[in-house]
Structures are given as C-alpha cells and as structure tokens.
Length: 467
Image (cartoon, rainbow, N blue to C red; front, side, top):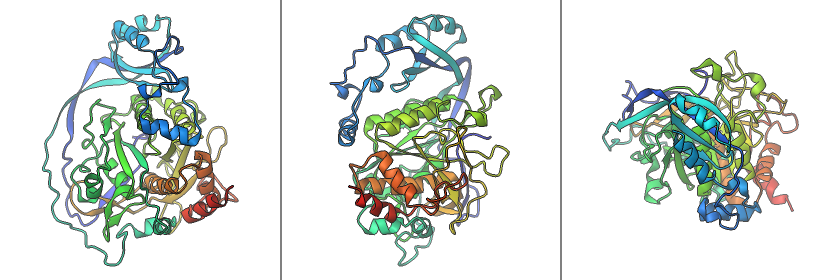
C-alpha cells in the first residue's frame, strides 16, 4: 500500500497485541460507484457575499476579517439547483466542495450520460467504489490505571525530547500553549479519544468540538483507526510527567476523511470536504498526516510529474485554504527508502506546510520523503522529530512509540498553533516564512530537509521584529 497514512508504531510496555476494537463492518455495493462532478459556474446562486453566515460560522467570518481576507463567490456552496439536477438524473450527493464548485456523488454507472449531458456540468470522473456502512461494535468505556511510570520532574514526560528539539518548551514557558486556537485534525479514525485520560482536559474544558466523518457522513469518528488518536496525542495530550503535547491548551475538531477499507481517489474528495468543513468552523490550523500517490486501481496512480501542486483536488484545496487564512500542515510522506522516494499529495501544494521526519538527535529519518516538486520547488518545507517519538496508546492508559512523518507533522502543527496564538494578526505567509527563516538550514535549503529543523522561539522573535 503506497498511499495512505504515513506511520508505523510499536507499543511501549505492551507484551501482547490488542484487538482492533470499535471497528465497523462494511460491504461494497458493486453496482454503485463514487464520482466527482464539477460544475461550470455558480450562476444564479442564492448565496451572497454580504450574507456569509449562510455558509460560514461566525468564527470563520471573524478569521477572514481579522486577516483582511474578503469573502468571495469562491466561498459559495454549489448552486442548489445544480445539486437537484444531478439528483434528478439519479445521483445521490455525498458531500460538496464550495471552493472547487463540485459534488461527490454515488450511484449506478448508467446515470452518467444523463449527468454529463446537463448544461451546468463541466467534468465527471470516477473516484472509487461505494461502500455501505453497518453498525459499529460497542466497546468498554474504561482504559484502566496508568501503566507508564510517571517521570518525576519532567513536565512533558516521555515527550520531552520531541518538543525540546524544536524549542517548543521555551515558547510554552512564554505563555503560548495554543489557547483560543482551533486545530482541525484530518485522519482515518480516532479510536479511544472519547475515553482516554490523555485527553481528559479536552473533554472537561469543552475543547473537543463535535467532529465529522466525511466517509460515512455522521459524527462517529472514535472508530476505524487508532492512527488519528496517536497523531492527536502529539499535540493535545495533557498528562504532566507522562505525555504533554505541543498545543495542550488548544481546541480541537477531529475529522475522519480516510477510508481504511481501500485506496481510491474518493479519499481525496473526502479530504477536500473535510478541509472545507474545518474552514467553515473557522479552524486556524489543520493537520493532515495523510498522503496520496498510488491506489488499488492502477489507473488512478500519480506520477512524479503530477506533483505540481495543482493536479490533485486535494492539493488545489490546500492552496485555497491557505489563501483563506488557514495554516495547512501536512506530512511529507514515508517513501524515502522506497522506489517512489518523493513526497505525496497534498504535500506538493505551495500552500501546504510539508513536514519531513528526523530522529530525536536531528538526523534525517531514512523513510522521510524527499522533494522537489515537479516544478522544482523546495519540499519538504522543514523537518521535525518523527522517528521513535512518544504517543498515547489508543487502547490502554500508557504511552507508545511510533515512527513516521505522520507524527512529525502534528508535532509542528501544535507549535504553529502556539505561534498563531502569539501573533493572531500575522498572515499565513508571515508565520510560515518566520519558521522557515529561523530553521537550521534556512540559508541553504535542500530537497531532503527543506529549511531544516525549526526553532519556534527564533520564529517568535523574528515576528516580533516585523513592523
């Protein structure tokens, strides 16, 4: 499997394998498929620039106003009449894209001629098989007592080295721990987050917002995969002397976009929908530890020449999100030792802050994907600890260890949120350039480590000096 979640993990203090609790069972409806339907325009839309509350939350509107970013027709949802038209032709709308003016639909292949013939339809392409959802399995709500020994006197516990490597602990001491910042996390599932003591403070302080499953179109995201749980823990865990993340005071929304049952381009459609949902909530930062290169159906595969930042709908959406004021942080990929070697999609997007992985001593991890993009841009942007870093276990109250750019990315995303807290009026480019220019290899970036290892206090000071 060349595409999908970038990580590998082993349990710390576990002597036996745990069952994959909370998994859902599904069946593929072979007669129905997913399709991406793009529209030609937004003519005769009922939406108005002067009434953005119809499609954006007050927080999203406030973010745009604070950063001087106008609401435009690009933010409008697709014309409701167009959606009715494709539904009349036999399609069922799964979700839509405001920015790309499209709908992800499913239905029989026999409906395609009627849809393609509609005067407002631009393009239609096959995205993957449609899978029906069945009920999730109930599980025990308790995780038991702490099984990892607390490290007396070490506030960050087993996560101390990974935050110190990027001088994040110093920024925390200055009072910036992500308070008031909304971080969206897009992944394949978040098993155990609703019950794990590592996230107690999130639940107690109401800093875990209602989440969304773009795959199954419900709010049940505490299922399917523990990967998102581990990713979230690098930022949100708050158990002093055991594990404290890089943004323990931030607010979070968990969005499931990855379908662990297969590898198809429909997941890019889910990714776009998840990103736009995060934008509509007013998210300040988004972390995605996901990437796309090759699929179960070879006809969908990307080539190195496709890494332009504009081929994939996911990369296109990442660029737009950055223009709308969101800090889009994404893993570079785990293909450094494979024949592919390169970054994945959407890490190729200019607007995506793409993160490679190092060991805790700063050496580049052999698995970390390299650049450049097809149009010769430097990627990854920077690197951060991602090999043998500490995470929260999804099934028991203990820490675990994992490796992957999947974890380097959220470690950075949490600190980006802290920097955003410190400079709420700075533009996306100002924040990201400050990080790049204060990183260890800023004067000589390359396609392996980008601008190098960041120093978030230096980035903070660089922003303070700006007029």
